[in-house]
Image 1 (cartoon, rainbow, N blue to C red):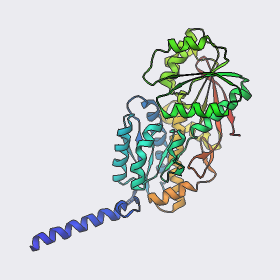
Image 2: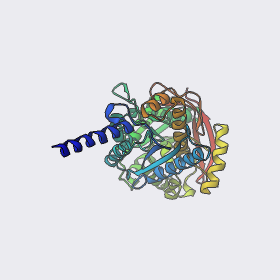
Image 3: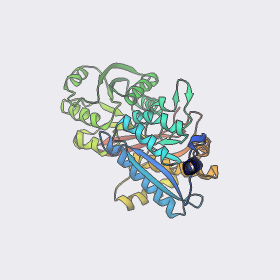
Image 4: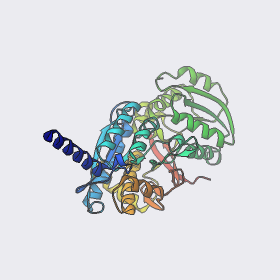
Length: 388
């Protein structure tokens, strides 16, 4: 009996120690212990949209290195705990639960809207905040009229970029008749199309749809070619957009093609062919031709030195997300996930490489948007646009 009692007491002491370290079972989130502060990375490192995830991993890793080289945060070094969600929503939910149980105090990612929505229940239950660098669906941070406490963005949301592109198409490009060709199989594309339609002051001539599995767009493009229009809006990701641009140009459709941040990957040019990517414009979060802040210049230099490449918007957004977490830890005065969440909600005038931003009441950053123009597959213009 005595031996059994001792085992029971030891077990209780062990459980108490685990609770004190993580605090999750007491409803107090996770608190860093020891000499390191764990930051999670829930990212699409393989699978259909791994191009986004790997760019964001590079941006996060650069930020972590810079911060640690400069002395860390509150005297502690940051440790990036990286997990691959395989571009799968169910896997993103599993990764989220794994990271929160491992003691991370904040998470960067996922990259896409569907994966971020799937991860939301786990981070909310564990009371660990996440910053998505590029999940732009409006319904991530606000659901059924309620702000989701533990999710934030370093990017703008779909309603912002859809609205900006509608304004840019009419005011800057003087386009009066637009056709929308959107992916009706994901929330990202449908949200963009909705925002564009609501803000565009010209005529929506037609609206056609495709799904993420489509590769042959000849039939729908034949219908579009017969229409009277001066711009084609393609809210979607690079994999389909690249094929649409290629096939449209080869069919003789020369009108302006408009898109969103899903265009922001070199694979778009590879799929479309550089010779076909002229008179193409898309909304984005960052451009090396239009650096938003003084901090952006240092980022450009350090990124090139580290990766021997020009940084993308996804690199920059993830880099900003890590520094936002750093700022929140410093503002909170401790590396506790609940306190970090509270500090992120109050973030004001934060100078990131994608702009000076303040978190609004819906956990979305208030900042400018860049509209990038492409000619022969290369960035030929970048205009900073403020939401009206």
